[in-house]
Image 1: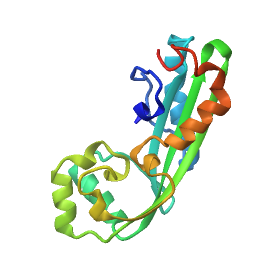
Image 2 (image 1 turned 120 degrees about the horizontal axis):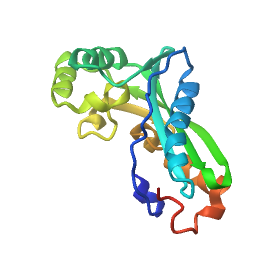
Image 3 (image 1 turned 90 degrees about the horizontal axis):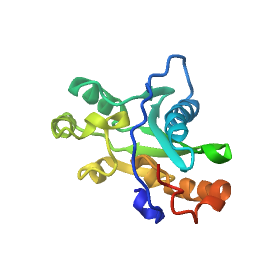
Image 4 (image 1 turned 180 degrees about the vertical axis):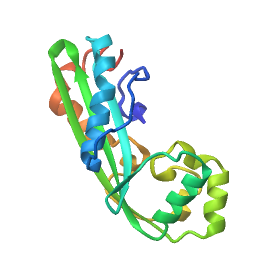
Length: 185
């Protein structure tokens, strides 16, 4: 998705633990995790503009993580079936050399159609839910059959709210965007 920005970039895995030890609202959780991810990478690459993001699904006040196993994925999909939930993504952008760090949160509402047991079973057996918050990916080949309505940024549900990223880059780091190393660690 970053290719849509037109910026040159490389990817690096942040070495942080993504476990939240205290109760958090969904917005606070994604901001905390994105900030936690961005800082060690930005410190290792002080001249680079570094981006980190984290996405969670929230339903009835609970944060739904990535499924631990197939049974957990089925349980999450059963819970979301026929209901509306929210997807929250936290963005953190940091540029150590200029001592700047900015975080933003984007929230999108998604309504899923009622799913049959066989639909849920087939989707879980495909393996697709296993690395996705809430146990589903809107970009998956079968998602158009499950997603009834979306209010907000589609790309946020995929995991990177491009409009929010674009506006934050230009508002807070516009002076770095012409630099050939701005998006590269």
